[in-house]
Image (cartoon, rainbow over all chains, first blue to last red; front, side):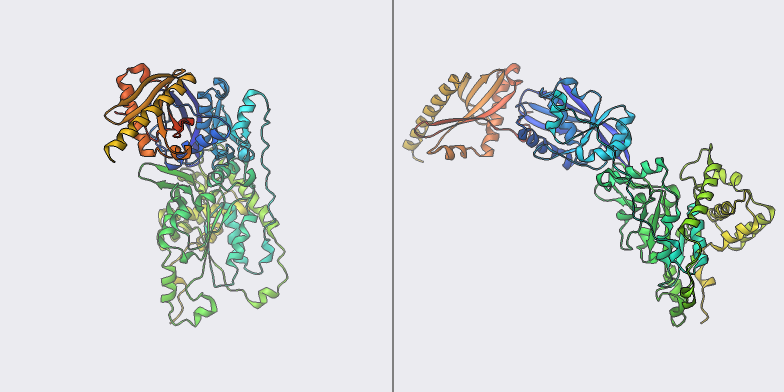
Length: 509
Length: 128
């Protein structure tokens, strides 16, 4: 007889059902796991054997075959332990055969039969809920798994499950983790002067546009970028669920607590390609995926490895990070807003640059590290001038995060309403407008159209750049509450476009 | 090893197996065969109890501790292969039963201990 239960294999953030089948045959006693297990899964044999021994159960001297179906899907991770152990419990009649009906299980066993938390309890719980199964998971992961809303059985150890089935102990469904109260974010009011940069930040926040701040050291680029999360609206329940799944796979959900705040990821410029895009031995999500529905802030942009930056081009366009392996592709969602900060040149730009004898080569070399195709994907390129003493002496600005966030929220609501009922993919913001919708949703008045066409010819804008300017102008018009895009909106959008430093920033020799 | 010593060892071994077999009979095992030689190795005792084939290795040493350590892993593997071969020739019914490997250890004075399930193969030791 074959006893079976269900567990899950993770493919990106999707959990695919895996059928665990256990058969016991006579003949040479042996315990084998088949179905493309990796080393961690194969070692599950020893953990299961030890865990059984610790609760006084012995595996019978038979040929025990554990098959993980579908057999051609490579299995990795330690979360198969629990399902294998439970199916074995049924096979050796330690629990009645119907105990595992309608159940799925994920969890790692320790040698004393207690359960260790594993990555991915939330996606597994969501998949179990979709299949109408009860998920058995480690007690530690219970708070995380119950966010899926399905039936969860969180158990401390194998013995707890046996007692539960025998009716000696009744296990209550675990409680959901809390919504984490994050400490308050820094206020935009702290930034003195820099009205132009603040305006750019507001537009970027409203439309989800990619933005690069360029300015000398100490002009407040990082300060401005760190104020962005405060301007962004809270995550919608659906977005929260998506992000939490990624965090669950990455093992970042502590005590099952979720946060409604949009992620803000600021990797150091020494970050490698697997760290940023995802990968490594187990194809883990990278920073771009952890910044899904949030902000990826790259400080000192030109200092990043060129190849790493180029690798961002594809997720920026498609909204997902694809990690290719010899035998499969793993996809993680990666719809993030890119915010970059850089100095205009190696000596920092600003007053120091005026005395730099290497100009304009220094400027061109430094900015040349960012490739054209990469910059083509940036909607807003904003110069941040150095702060003067007069700026610092000013009283704090009247507008803070609260006022700007209210305008951003209003603009975002307009965008969401416009996209309602259409087949839109991606975030409900202008930057993710699809080509099919752009023309219909971005009506431009004749004067504006003429300006745009002239500019496109003069700056030889690419087709992508043309539409990106249009989308940016749409956001500016939304902030103004206008239904149609006018010439001033387009003019402002065009000023944010990247231009070659050789033409614009050149310092007279 | 000279001839005399070899003969003495052989005799002692037979005596130990005889004692072990009778001990197991008292414990309800039926002894199917004794001292079997196959192409892969030798089997001391082959028993049956409650639908299970029990392959028994008998070891006699000065102390029980010595005897317990006297069967290294490679020796067990040889026994495992020999058991598969021997049972394979005795028909499917016996071959397909659950199979256990036991160790019976004795001192020179026939102090005896039975260790059930003393070893399990790490990988399937079969002959195809």
